[in-house]
Image 1 (cartoon, rainbow, N blue to C red):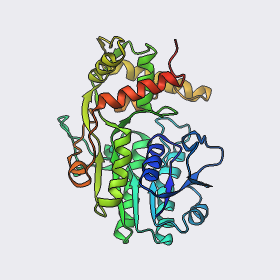
Image 2 (image 1 turned 120 degrees about the vertical axis):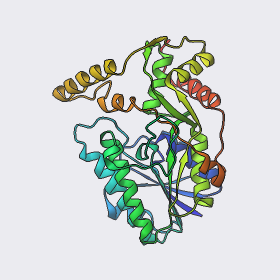
Image 3 (image 1 turned 120 degrees about the horizontal axis):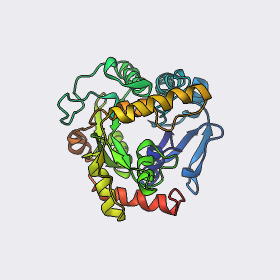
Image 4 (image 1 turned 60 degrees about the vertical axis):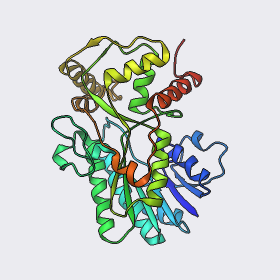
Length: 329
C-alpha cells in the first residue's frame, strides 16, 4: 500500500515513518524546501517537496496514495506573527484533507493533540468526551489545533474516512529540535533545572504513539478520536524519575506559578521588542497552571495501544541526548 505522510522530519512523524516501513508500506513523504532530512537518512522512502499552505502541491503529491497520515504542524508557543500557526495548522489541514478526498484515500489519520481537548476542573484525567470550547484554549498553538480538529470534523461529515488521534506528551529518542518536553529533559541533564512548579503531564513512549497511528488506520472507527497516552506524572515525579535514571539530583525547590509567569511575561515582552524568540515563552508558562492528565483507555481497548513503561522511553531519550551532543560535559 502506498501511504502519504506529512511531518516525517519531525519527532512523532519520524517514528511513524519507521513504523509504516516496518509494516511494509511504501511511503511518500512531503517535506518543505530546506527541511532537515536527518530522520529520513538511510530509509527507502519517496520524498516530494511541497507546503501545507499550497493546495496544488499537495494534490500532485498525494496522487496514487491509498492512505494519508497528516502529522505535520507548526508547533510553537511563541510566534511574532501568530497567523503563521493558523495558516499551517488550520488551512494546511484543510488543504491536506481536500487533497486526500480528491485522491480517493481509503483512510486518513489526522494527528491532533491533547491540547485541543478539554480538561477536568478537579485535575482528574480527561478523555475524548470531556467538554471543551475554543474559549478554553490557552494560546495560539492550542487554538489552531482546536480549529484544525473542527476542519477534520467537517470533512468527516462530508464522508471522508478520517480518524483523529490526540497524542499526549511523547518522549524518547530522536527528538531533534527538541520539543518543549525534550528541552525540559535536556535542561535537567545540563543541570539547568533549579526548581519546579505544581503541574503535571501525561507521558507516553513516542514509539507507542507511532504504533497508535498505524493501529488507528487499521482499527480506528471513522469519526472517532483516540488519546494516545500512557502515564500521568507530576512535574516533580518526572524529575525524580530522571534523577533515578541518571544519578542527577531532582530539584527540591517548589516555586509558585506567579514567579515563572512574571519572568516569562518580561522575557516575551522584551523578545518582541528586540525581534528574537523568548527563552521562556509566556504561553508555555500559562499552560503549566493546568495538570494535563488524560485517560487513554479507549485507545488501549480499541486500538491495542501499547503502554511501554515510561522509564524505558525516558532512558532512551537520555541516552540519545547524551550521544548526540545535547548535554555538556
